[in-house]
Amino acid sequence: MNFNMIKNLARKNVNNLVPYQSARRLGGKGHIWLNANEFPISVHFELSQKTMNRYPECQPKLMIARYADYANLNSDQILASRGADEAIELIMKTFCEPGKDFILFCPPTYGMYKVSAEIIGINYRIVPTINNWQLNIQSIAENLNHVKVIYICRPNNPTGNLIPLNDIYNLLEITASKVLLVVDEAYIEFCIQSTLVKLLKNHKHLIILRTLSKAFALAGLRCGFILADNKVINLLLKVITPYPVAIPVSDIATQALSKENIILMQNNVKQLNINKVWLFTQLTLCNCVKEVFTSESNYILVRFENSAKVFKYLWNKGIILRDQDKNLGLEKCLRISVGTRQECEHVITALQDL
Image 1 (cartoon, rainbow, N blue to C red):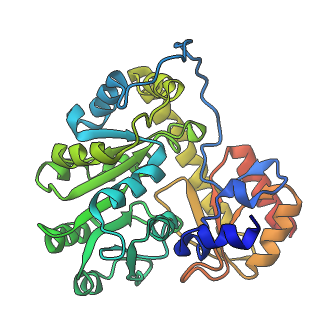
Image 2 (cartoon, rainbow, N blue to C red):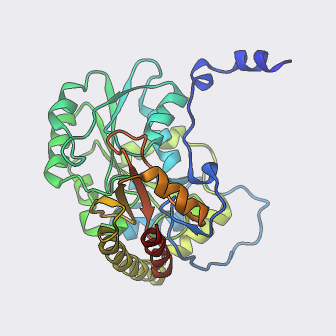
């Protein structure tokens, strides 16, 4: 069987798909990795469960209970997934009819909303943000025909801004009883006071996505959570794979969600936010920088006079950033993950040399 025959067997949308380019797919040979919004320091854990001959629980009880306690919710409002990425797809698979229903998102934003829809075969509508990446509420309201799910990233990736609470209330009002509003809180620990968890009580169509990849420094673990009304959770449980959380994953995640390790995470976040303030200030002083955008997350979006030159120069020095130039409204922009103070200093020194 030749390649053309194989290609003909593949689904049309897969043949036409432009895959999401993760940081690791893009590669590079750096020693300072600031392109994936990872936490810059590792937290040490050791496996407590040594036997792997049995299948894991679909939703490990202690891990779920600890996350529920952390989020101030009931256990039946929590579902664990393989990172927030699986959660994004799981919601589409559960609520959207391929070829019939639509999702809606507002670029520039996280690219997996679009890619997941294309993989599954779900239509999508794009309502670009306006005025420093704020939502165009009126345009969203006018484009809800056949839309089942809206995805909002808050804080938004890659811009770092926080959609105002009043806009969230407006969205909840216009989507009530007809559309699910999914708010991706992957980065919320960096501005935890802005979480929307309290809104779940009175808004049954609100779904919140969380992850241990960012503030908990466990990107390699691939563990995320869906926070929602228990009726939504029960539907998602029908669709999720039989064993989504491996035993080593639940083991380490459960440890990470202990009270002492949550305090450790919160202290680490405080230090990273201090580094972010320092990096932000220093970037504004660099001659090659045109604009630095305020961020509520663990990265900073920067517009340069010549972003391609800066990206290549730093790349050759082993400092790997994320190029955003081709994203809507982000011409000449690079996204810089906030690293350790030493890593931040290396970035500034290199930019000053340039």
